Image (cartoon, rainbow, N blue to C red; front, side, top):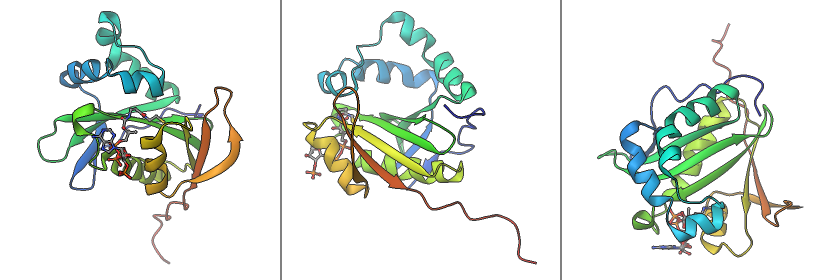
Length: 180
Ligand SMILES: CC(C)(COP(=O)(O)OP(=O)(O)OC[C@H]1O[C@@H](n2cnc3c(N)ncnc32)[C@H](O)[C@@H]1OP(=O)(O)O)[C@@H](O)C(=O)NCCC(=O)NCCS
């Protein structure tokens, strides 16, 4: 948990292929549909969103930001803005956060998760996060590939539910103070 509220990105984070942005009401149908994907359920441990979860989805995302717990963001196409996946920066402390992600089934295999992780890492760096981690089931080959592509290093650590932990240190954000 962060000690203060998480300021959402003021503008979408983008690399020209995807944009990572806060979620909107018109994203929820796609997020809910993807929540029924067996791979997402298997690896993220979430069930399909029910009617109440759909209805409260945006309010819960806002509360997560306000409380300093996490930043549930959306991965969208940089050109069309169509939803392609979700990514969540989860704060363990002010300086340590984990990233969870899921790319919608139709958009997999295009390297989008690695792009989203890179954009979120850069944003986290600006929030003074010093280290980001991924927690991945050792049999989740696709996600292990993402960790490798994003230059995360394995730690000698296993979570209580048996996940391998990967870490990436973030360089300190450059001070904006002007030179004397
Ligand atoms: C893990 C996941 C986010 C990867 O996203 P992605 O944008 O498809 O990632 P990439 O395109 O870099 O592909 C990663 C690997 O997925 C596999 N892959 C490739 N095409 C695929 C497809 N169409 N469908 C499924 N997996 C595919 C390959 O092993 C690939 O590795 P490679 O690029 O070295 O061949 C995505 O598979 C997913 O959403 N899975 C379910 C949720 C999940 O596991 N989240 C992570 C929890 S730790």
